[in-house]
Amino acid sequence: MIEILLVFALAIGLGWPLGRYLARVMRGDTSVLDRVVGPVERLVYRLLGTAPNRGMSWKGYAKAFLLSNLVLGVAVWVQFMAQAWLPLNPDAIPNLRWDTALHTMVSFLTNTNQQHYTGQAQLSYLSQMVGIVGLQVITPMMGLAMVVATLRGLFGGREAMERHASTSTATTARHDVLPVTKFYREASGAGAASKGTTAPAGAQRDLGNYWVDLTRATLRFMLPLCLAWSLLLTSQGVPSTLQGGPVVAPVDASVEMKEQKIPLGPVAPMVAAKQLGTNGGGWYGPNSAVPLENPTPFSNLLETLAIILIPVAVTFMVGAFTRRRKLTALVFGTMLLMSVISTGAAVWSDGHSSTAQDVALMEGKEVRFGADASALWAALTTQTSNGSVNSMHDSLAPLTGGVAITNMLINAIWGGIGCGLSQFLVYLLLAVFLAGLMTGRTPELFGRKVEAPEVRLLAVLILLQPIVVLGFTAIALYFPSITGNSNPGFHGVSQVFYEYTSAFANNGSGFEGLGDATYWWNLSCALVLALGRYPALVVPLAIAGLMARKKPTPESSGTLHVETPTFALTLVAVIVILTVLQFTPALVLGPVAEHLALVAR
Image: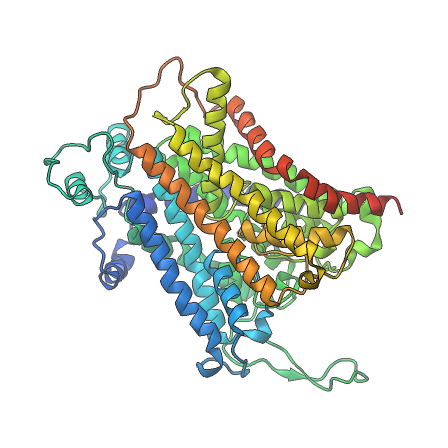
């Protein structure tokens, strides 16, 4: 219990200043880092061929996001298939098969890190350092950039936010703020907007510059934090070397294996990036259950804290970035409420329920940490899109596994960096629409109406999840020959359902026991990974772009106020109805049925 309270206290205590700092970074405020980071940023902009003061409409922002993903994806895919011929491969690891390389590339490109390979045995140091860690650093910042642009759109665009900031607080100098005239002339293809005028209703709005947002977030926030965490983990004994692993004799001399090679490498930097970036994955196959990757109680605390640190910071960023403190209270309070309920349920189920005494439940758990620490990690890693583990989720109590699946179905308790807040905004828009229907008011959010075009896009996102997750789960279970699961009973249903839920939620954790290194699992999961990532980021951005073009209406006595405890509870109810209830049959056939069978023994 002390560790649980300590993790939450540290996450909140550190997340508050980090969130305020992150808001300054994404607003483009000047700071003491300008002299150090500024020249590097300007060099990056020149290499990318972009002007930092040039804004983008939502379509231009989305195109830049998708283009960057395409270029990175192709480069990393080729690297995985050619690693045997590239340097930094002291263990002579062969190339990955094309489908495994494709799945691995898509998995890490989508900030998921679902692994159908054994990291220490199938990837070279170069692949780990460049392909894996490189994506682990940059892809969470891509998600952050997308949600920042979405927030700008919901508040009318960057110009409207700057104008609001100048009237509410002292103006701070910014070097990347786009002049309104320049953007609207370029966006409309005409010079109708005169100097000093604002854009007319219906015109495209400036949602920021994708390349600037991505570069600033990476250089000023993610990399310094990863460096600090890497040094802390190295101090605890996590390997950080480019030398090949030593060869040792097994302790039991009677076994047929006469020697064993201990895989090492630059593990600490990867662990720092995977934990802080809600990436998951691991240098070693068993992830942070391996003593080399997680050697001490303090390293376990550091890695557990890192899972939720930045997602919590992002919730604090919202209020400072939008200049609405009550919005942070809504987002943080709602997420914290769901997180406490989820964590409490997981810890009770795995360590204190009637089934917790079953000795079989300790199989797959690291005895150095125990059941409570394992359940805490399992809850937090699925509340975010982290997916790393310090115990095998296949060995969790059935109801704990059900909690983990539910967390991923919601995907907005804290969520991934950027992605979690983006999904939260989807639920917020739906709750506003439904509340408006129930009260007879025109649905509107932040002074802009939520109308049919926006609701149709929201419906696409809500329907996409059950169609994809349940559809692929049904196909895999219908053909046992392609499933390859180790347990044909109720747990077998959970294994398959968990795999596709994890893929769609961009989480990456899994119920080990599936023969997932096959063409079916690699290709089907790669598709589900992409469907879970790109619509969830691009569609909210499109909705924000549509709403930004609308003329805001002043608040009145009939305005629905969303930043209240009553609306927060309404929002939680909407989340439960739209995510949990529609998947209840699958949960009953899997974790619930398995729990009842275990109790009845």
